[in-house]
Every structure is written in C-alpha cells, then in structure tokens.
Length: 171
Image 1 (spheres, rainbow, N blue to C red):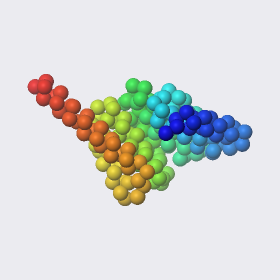
Image 2: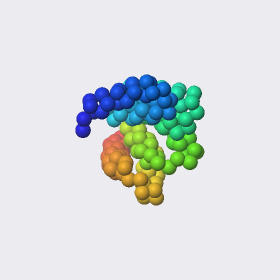
Image 3: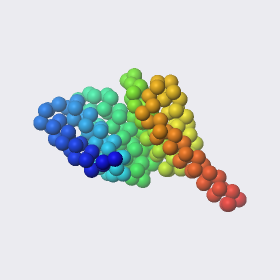
Image 4: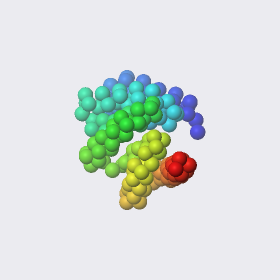
C-alpha cells in the first residue's frame, strides 16, 4: 500500500540496528530490506542488502538469516537476468533453511522460486515448486503466502498456454 513509507521505516530500522550494536537484529532487517526491495522491483538494491545479510550472517554464524538471504539474493540475481544462477542460489537457500529444521516461511521462499521459474520460462519446474508450496501450506497451515501461490499458478498456466500456442504455430 505505501512502499515509500515502508522504505523510510526500513531505513530507520537499519540505522537503529547499527546504534544498538545488535548483529542479529541487523541481519534480520537486512533480510527484510532485501525482501522489500524485491517487492518494489528494485533487484539491485535487494541484491546489495541480501549480500550484506549473507556476509554478516556468515561472520556471526546466523544460519537462518544466511539461508534466507541466499534465497533472496538468488531471486534478485534472477530479476537481473541471471536466472540460472538465481535458481541455483534459491535452491541452496531453501535446502539450507530446511536443513536447520526451519519450517516457517518455506512457502514464501517457494513462492519466490515459483515466480522466478514462471518468468524465466521454466514452467515445469515452476509447477513442481508450486505444488510443493501448496502442499506445504496445507500441511503446516501457513497460509500467509497462499494468495501469491494461487496468483503464480495462474501465471504458470498462462505461460504454459503461450508455450503450447507458440509450439503449435511453429509446427
């Protein structure tokens, strides 16, 4: 609703984490910043914040933020035209997230990956990731990103239809 206000509050929070000398909170807000910049369609800024989060998380041994920032960085890479690298990074991030036993926000990460697949023409991979996200939402009752997953299902169906139409015209 108010992306400029969100950005202003985010900057305030990032500044506050520096004055508090709290690396954990700083990593948290760097990951939030990366996600907000992705939502704003600013992948370069998202990449910058995700990389800062990854670096801090490696230094401080914060496995959750390291995993999530890897996924976010992958999404930013893909949005900058480096889909293969982005998908690989996102898959690493999701595996790492699950590897530490985390369940919360996997549907968000799967929605990000589904979106990258849809936009990069990886329709079959997108449908597999989407099915995993929908099943996980049902299994865990985490429905926060369910609307996004359903929107992405429509995007994939449209992409699949366009691919079938183009193939039919070529034959």
